[in-house]
Amino acid sequence: MAIVYEKKGKVTWVTLNRPEAMNSIDPETLQELSHAFVDFNEDHEAWVLILTGAGDKAFCAGADIRKLVPVLEQEWIPRPWRMPVNITRGLEVRKPVIAAVNGIAFGGGCELALASDIRIASENASFGLPEVRLGLLAGWGGTTRLARHLPPAKAAELIFTGEPMPAKEAERWGLVNQVVPLPELKATAQKWADRILDAAPLAVAAAKEVMRKSMNATLDEALQLEWTKLCDLFRSEDAREGRKAFLEKRKPNFRNA
Image (cartoon, rainbow, N blue to C red; front, side, top):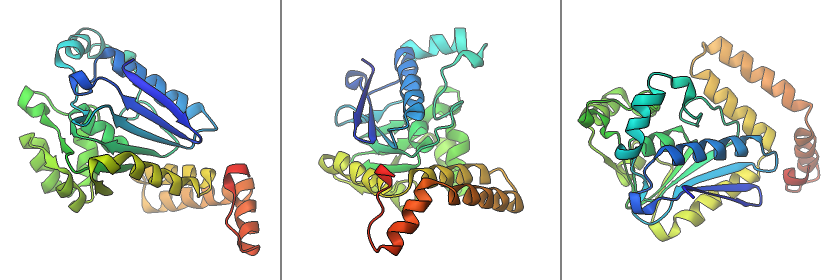
């Protein structure tokens, strides 16, 4: 299997499983990855997804040039609507996605990390968009998303040169939430997921939607959307449990609300 899909309670783990190829993306991987995100999105019992790579060298080295590029040229560039949907393009994942970056994240791997909501990286990780060195650009969301995550000049440096950014530097620029030793990566990602699980799932999903849509809205439009979502949440069972727990001076139990 190119992808390993595991449900552990309310956390779904998706592992890119081609360590012999640095977890690069071939057509099979892309299709399985699409199915994994769609399944997670539609599973009401799954609240958080953690995306990582097999092995200790690569999160994802990007496209498998030998296998993926011919399909892109023959099938998906002329007919882009046939390309499998993913978090990078074509699929709005309503729930939090954490990237546990366990090594190099180049090209499509960097784009998968950028499309995630939270990024935890191992000390040996690095991020890069080397497409310009192949006469291309990062067209899976890298060119646009990196410019939203970093100051314009820093984003231009990485996009125009194709040079990678080490994990620690990525953390300093705010591209990564936390950097940890590789043996601690999965446990750290799980801790971040557990922190999210302590919050109300409807509220987290609404907050993610407001954050995403506000990027392309005026301030007035964003404030109106924020207020609309707040009004919707007031009527939810999660909100009733949250208020009740506050008054009873106990921790809310959203998992069973």
